[in-house]
Image (cartoon, rainbow, N blue to C red; front, side, top):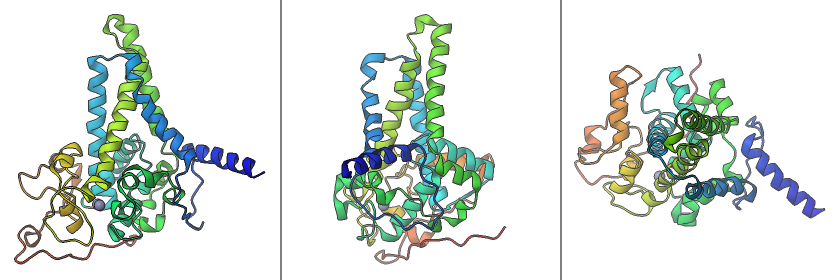
Length: 329
Ligand SMILES: [Zn+2]
Ligand SMILES: [Zn+2]
């Protein structure tokens, strides 16, 4: 009996990967912090997909697509999932908001509402016992890739993100976020087969583009994103005194297009820019500045002079806390 209950729970976890239960915001939050292996199986399966490179070979087209999708999705996660949906550090059109929400979903890191709600919670509780991915509390493995495999992390708390949960298209993406990566995977396979049929000597195949464009690229995006939760709370330098352990790291900043300036960011999360000086390279900010010249985004928030050049030793300033009131519209 208990075995049966256990296996049906496992199956339910697998099903929830593809179609999470509809969240009315009324169910009590799940608090269990054990690893849910039903969710972990597809996650580790994605990693096994990388090993298929030894069977499908490579081509310049496959590697170029993998690099392009890495850059596009890292920018989307840092520029939009983080600096826009989590922190509202600039404004954009509703259609642009939706397009980048869709691209973000292709990273297989859930929808923008789930991602941003958890990140807002992180800023309010950073490194205190309630922080869901603090290495100070539960170690490096947990902060890197343990926390999101637990029942506690599964629910999207719309109360933390009412300002974006009011958009039905974002709620749809949040519930069916896996539709996008499935379409990406099928599209890559189909494009590879199309190229193979037209140019049989190219060495390109559908499976090759699927493995490089989807598995290799997505796993790279996974782990550079996770470094922001693990490494930049452990290793690096601190310009500002904050209540958490956030650090600045050039290596993580280069890999993540600017997220490595995490101590800057925890001290002053409201600015669009996270690299404060010219040597703090922040590729996401450069791209967002370019998009603002095109009129696609606007009202990028600057870093105030009092933050850049504090007169006395920098002390913690209050973080803009959870729910931002919904504007009636
Ligand atoms: Zn942090
Ligand atoms: Zn943040």
